[in-house]
Image 1 (tube, rainbow, N blue to C red):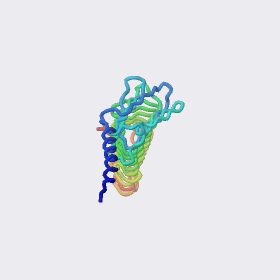
Image 2 (image 1 turned 30 degrees about the horizontal axis):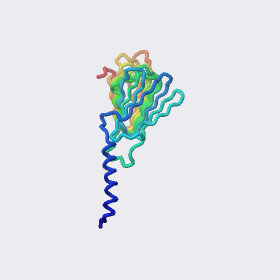
Image 3 (image 1 turned 45 degrees about the vertical axis):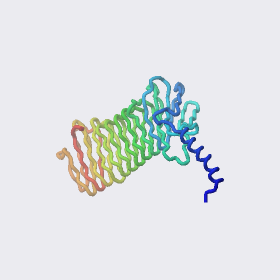
Image 4 (image 1 turned 90 degrees about the vertical axis):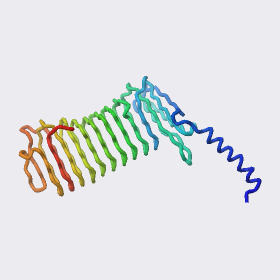
Length: 308
């Protein structure tokens, strides 16, 4: 039975909750929090959020600008900032215990003049760098299950990692490039540098590559790589799926392909010979690279030709 006392007690509480909800709601298209930082003495920037989408843009001046949009505007939900000596660390603020329809997304305006270290991490959020041209010393991007989009990035060192997310990559240039996924897919239009790619079960396609590298699919997932210029050795391994490799027409190289349960197909049959499950040979008179391709349970296609 609802007594008069219960009604008197519940009414004010209900009214307060309604007022709080109404007053705290904001339009996610309006900036709830904006931070500005001079990067004059900053050589290391870390951006770390959980499930928030992060979008990067070029900044018009030399100031780093962080804009946070959220459905509930509360100071404790604003970004946490740690600045020590030359490093700047920006991470997500709090969020409601019962999150409900709470939503937050981030816009970051990075000056083109910033060319030092940049690290970006999310758990479930997407990272969008399609509207910015990055040119930094060290680029690190880590996402658990979000989609990472990069239009153009140049660095001395580049580390990209994901558990189950997707990489949609435009043009990457670096002395050393590491790409690691567990079961996420990678699609890269252009890549230039020393590449180390490792995956457990994701598909990977590198449409136009320059340099040399090591590509490893430890369990399964299609592996497709097309090189327009090779200036070092190539090693491709896929345990339980197919490998498609395209090499430059003028490349002279030592070739070795091994498969336990699969077929090997090339368009330079005259330069190679089959020895059991191994195919070996020399293409050209003065080989400058060694190309080694191996599968356990997959087909190998290796041809010289043009990337499409």
